[in-house]
Image 1 (tube, rainbow, N blue to C red):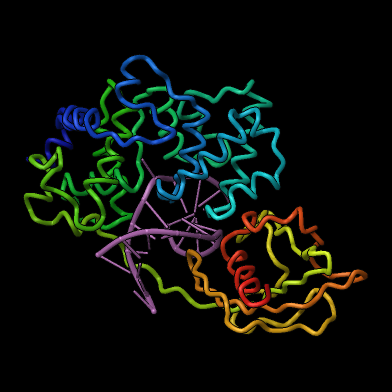
Image 2 (spheres, rainbow, N blue to C red; image 1 turned 60 degrees about the vertical axis):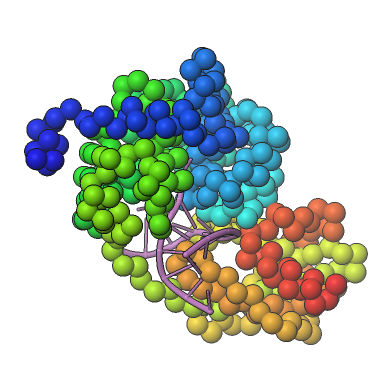
Length: 359
DNA sequence: CAATCGTGGCG
DNA sequence: TCGCCAAGATT
């Protein structure tokens, strides 16, 4: 019955109405969001703020994004201002948020929109998809939320909600096409932007990964996995590989006037474009190759940090930086020019270990 | 397609 | 302590 409904192109189940009514009453108040009431009164979201928030929210929690969004929009209120910003300033403001390719693409995109599109974001999914750092999800989200186009957003929330609503037992990522088709079948022609945000709000607050609040879900009477008792275990996922542990050494050198030896990492690869301490490669047994000859002191303790696909244990070594030193790596940054907040978290941990012991 | 790419919170 | 997870994109 239910499969034949879907395969025959039967009218989508009337989910959108329930979800929009729930959203009207329970929408989260988010800094980048136009409330459903304001939206109904004709207020349009600013595409720049929608784009910026969506990029920040890629694989990142709302709680983590809030402060970054405030700082970015305070410093750079529109896409032209962001396009005019310096690379180091933007990377420094992004520090700590992770996935730094997003920040590099953010700048590329801002400069493209400003330079080639007269500062206006495209309003179609296909045109948005051509922008740096904008993939299928973000293109659909901007088109739907900023321009109220009937696009179907597919993120982790929507995958989970659809898998549960239709009790889809196929594990991810195999199930993605089916989940996408299900989601598309529910997307309404009216208020598609509010609808997209409603599904994601539901996934974030009610239909959560662990212990979903099915009892207060606006879709509880239509949810097939709730009826079957399978909701908490959905969506199924293929098991992940274990993370190996790598080791590395970083070198912190300070001059008498407080200047520090730092290094701008290359744009490609891990922490690309970010500031960091000169250091070894990260592997099984890193070689001790300090940036200049000195009597290096190994700090007690170590830095432990987990990246997406490996654990890292860093040894921190320090030495005074002579006025006449000619380091083989990095560049000297004056005390005033250095902000610890410009460092990615793993590098800030090394800095904190050093400060905790020496200063 | 599978691998790469951060970080913080939570059970 | 540790694995899981978050409004994914890119190659």
